[in-house]
Length: 142
Image 1 (cartoon, helix red, strand yellow):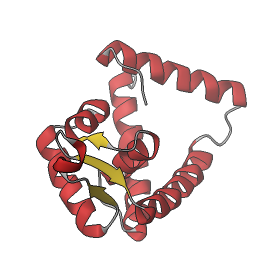
Image 2 (tube, rainbow, N blue to C red):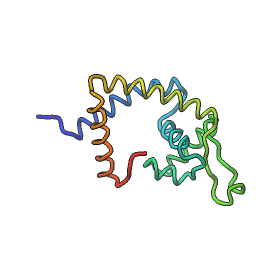
Image 3 (cartoon, rainbow, N blue to C red):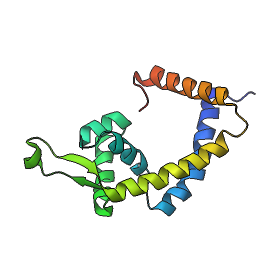
Image 4 (cartoon, rainbow, N blue to C red):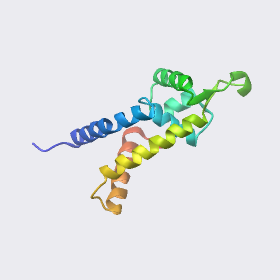
């Protein structure tokens, strides 16, 4: 029986996660934190609900991740009185340092993952993934 698209994506996701998680822990990051740091590096001073929406994470999960990130000094929350609205979240210098380490780890894993693919194949592969994500969510990958 041939492997289905669903199974192939599932297996690649788990293989990638199994390679990524030890490096993430070594940096000092927990699951969910890298994508929030990445988002905040591009969209600083975000509202919690906007982070949840942009990253397809449940608001309660985002809240817990953000609490841990504040304690670790990776992000800070503004005082709601300063913003005249709900509090916003921004990345700290320490958060930027951790994000840089994370991005280097991802680059190393990507280099291994895409070994043997031509530049054109890599671009096509990413295009296919972007299109699949759009088909499933109606949103573009950030």
